Amino acid sequence: MNTAKYDATPKEQVRYANMLFYGCWGGLALMAITYLIYVFGVFEPHVPMDTVIQLWSKPVRDYLTVGQVPVGWGWATLLNKGDFLNFLGIALLAGMTLVCYVPLVVAYVKKKDSLFAVIAVAEILVLAFAASGIVGGGAH
Amino acid sequence: MRAKPIRTTILVTAACLLVAGLVLAGASAGMAVEGAAAVDAMTGAQSDMAWWMWPLILLGFCFVLGIIAVLAGVGGGVLFVPLVSGFFPFHLDFVRGTGLLVALAGALAAGPGLLRRNLASLRLALPVALIASACSIVGAFMGLALPTDVVQLCLGATIMFIAILLLTSKNVVRPHVEKQDAIGLALGMNGIYTEPSTGEEISWKTHRTLPGLLLFIVIGIMAGMFGLGAGWANVPVLNILMGAPLKVAVGTSKFLLSITDTSAAWVYLNQGCVIPLMAIPSIIGLMLGSFVGVRLLAVAKPKFIRYMVIGVLLFSGGRALMKGLGM
Image 1: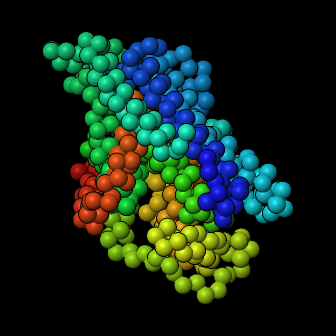
Image 2 (image 1 turned 180 degrees about the vertical axis):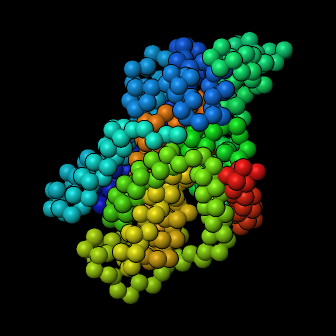
Image 3 (image 1 turned 90 degrees about the horizontal axis):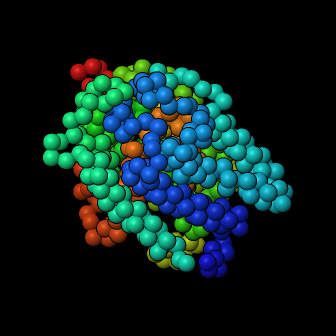
């Protein structure tokens, strides 16, 4: 990739952009593949399609109860099921920002920009907290 | 391998395979002449449509939505949530979860180009993103805890406000910032970008940083609560209030969504509010539509489409209000 024309752009910003590019489009490609595996029934779904279309008009608690759907990272234990296999691509997309922030911290520390290093670390903590599912419940 | 061919190939292939796959999978599931009336074993309810019809409809609907969103200059999320919750049978919980993923995917796809061209600035984005993303978690939990009709009511009012904001706001291409305030200076909220049409290098700085940062608390909460993208709020705050040039404000806003929406999306994901059967065709449909929309921008009449979208938002906002009032 020719980056000469982006010389005015901070290096850490270009690096972030490159990581984001490959992660994002990789995630979308993975999503398309796992979705086809799902709809073609290559792996049996955890919640049958006909059940899904009955439950998606109801509040999430009904979907979780009737469909016996796990919350938090419980989907990771159901990757052999066609529907939950799709969460791989979704999680990759949702996780990209956190992953891209890590080299930012390193770059700001090297530049001795302690304020932005702290901001970047704080953001990683916020995203990790959101992703962890530590605080659960609340769904009506 | 160049960026554009990669994106085009993935999107077009994904969309074609999805359409073909949904049709073939539905046909092979035996949903044929007698129709799709089937009694579901788990719920005992009868369905009118084959399961594969809805993802197909969503794919097509979101494709059109993606085109319109680009032509009208609005985000996909701000159209997706009110329109899908108003006119599709999906519960608002799942629509918000999917809406956030749709907005996130769009922001992640646009982010690299904007960052490389310095039209999205990390100096501007990182401090506001920290505030907005933390508050979007709070908003997501609030949205999931409140009764659905209350959220519908608030969503309806917000959508109508957004429509009025789109109608009345006058963005400033290059705001005049005489002196940067102390907070903006300390955070280094300034930069240089190259105007593509003239090749001119434009330097910029911000002011009124503290009020701007405080407004991002509200923006973050609303983004998480309603599953909207928040670009409609980011741009006026960054441009009109804080004085960032319009192109930097729009670019940074788009990039900001990738951070704000990530934290809220994880909350909805962890609460079970993402159904792959509806989420993935929505994401891919909208991404493909956005792609086509960018190419149509040169020949379309964006102003007319923008007014049409404002009309649609007013209508769907009113519909959400009525749903919330139980009418």
